[in-house]
Length: 117
Image (cartoon, rainbow, N blue to C red):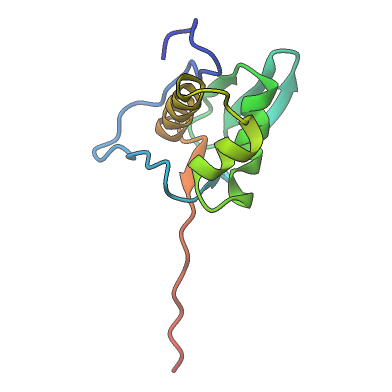
């Protein structure tokens, strides 16, 4: 994502064999492998496995990343946290989250199914 884009993540990890597709209708959360350090511009996200830094370029994006887990979908989180005034703003945040998913900052929430036996 270009550095001039609103709320963009600027660093990406190398492409995996099967890149993670971002589905904004799914439930997402910040990866447990990510540490966030608050900064005046937003935050730095540090990936403990890859040792890469990703810039979160606004405080709203930081709130969105941290609040994803509290909503049923990324779309619902965007509506509740960002409160976009138009579709362009909503799409910019979807694009930013897709970039963060590609960088491993956020990941889909998976529910484990346990068997009773």
